[in-house]
Length: 97
Image 1 (tube, rainbow, N blue to C red):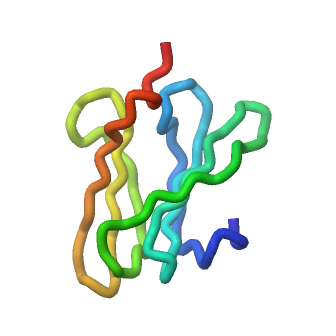
Image 2 (cartoon, helix red, strand yellow; image 1 turned 135 degrees about the vertical axis):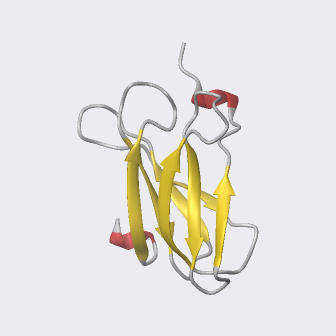
């Protein structure tokens, strides 16, 4: 994932609840979070980028369902702003039937 702009850290989880592993990564100095959706056969779909609401330096991410809605949320540690950000997974597309 080095071609996606200086990724500092990554976390693996099933972010779209399809039973397949996905990868979220913090893009340092790019001010966003990248997501690779797993296909289940070792490959990934085209990367998705989610802009941060600030001009910081995301250096560490973790995932957990913080609001108990069945979707993994992302916690972001920012080095420049000395802050912790939370990105709630609110996308209806992230629930698999």
